[in-house]
Length: 493
Image (tube, rainbow, N blue to C red):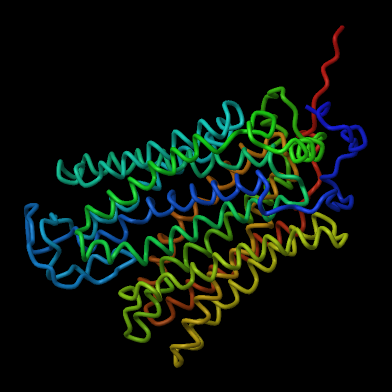
């Protein structure tokens, strides 16, 4: 691969360490690698939208007064409930929209089914993508999830078992898509552009949340809740076709890339990746403190994010007696802010690299900025219970600033082990996903045990966990390629 570049021989040093990462040419937003980033952005957009549309449509799917699926011919208004509150069932639904008698416990099982599938495939998907290619893994995941979303209304009509099974299978597909996509940056992202390319790609998750929240309720109200699944499922099939045509696993196989850009990318990554498939050094990974610091910090940060998404809106509602869950824009506002901050933070990280900041310093600065303000704002939330505007502003800023971690700890695997980064990024996210199960369980216990100070305890615990994870990462986090991640040279006797 390196022979394609006349300057590849000059790039013999490992630029993943603390060397200067100054670009050899100015990055172009119209280049092929940025086109790949925007396609992955679109893929993430549909992945997240398909993930949360059940939360939005659930309010239109349930009817606590009926014991059999029925149809309602009314066209009165439907509240835009982005969190699927089972207690906010509409009195009337669009024409020919079936409703079901699902109690809150059954609804909880339906919501959580997709997470079980995702946990199963997040780590294996990264390894699989590194072996057979990101294009195949993510393409299959996108098509599978889209077809399952299209099938969801029919599965609900067949019965609860069919619906839960469909949700689990969809979670498996989404886990493959989310965990497998990071392998593409092993061969497409020059080190000094890595933050912004990953930021552009991952920010699609936030945009998908915004659009699904804003449009899901409107579509349910005007066309009926099954149309939400048909529209987002159909759009996913279109994205699958675009993915198959426009995305390639590396610059070498891309048929339309400019030869100058291809040589530039290959020479930039000459010392990080190769064409041979090396086995995973599992024992060395388990003993690696930099890797554990990354996993622990991802877990603690995801705990914070889960608390914000699940409990902060309910806190505002209970304290101020204002149901913000029925306001589509207000529910989407934190994710809109997060989408903007994610893009700006990614560009800021790469900008600091051009100013001779050490790579490990940039990663830790981004991680600190994404952890400390967010957890602090959430900690002081119970102390501003007298001012609704301040409380909502803190909630919005806490969610938005948390995405500054994206160009920090979340892409650190590309620094410490570029050859195995696809597996490690999936594994770290699978480890962090455990917080999605533990955070609501522990927080629910705290709220039930101490009604008076329960919210303060929930937010304080989140602050402590987040701070401990951050400290562990600041002490043991690294950005240079680890010894166990370097190329092994075989000696022939």
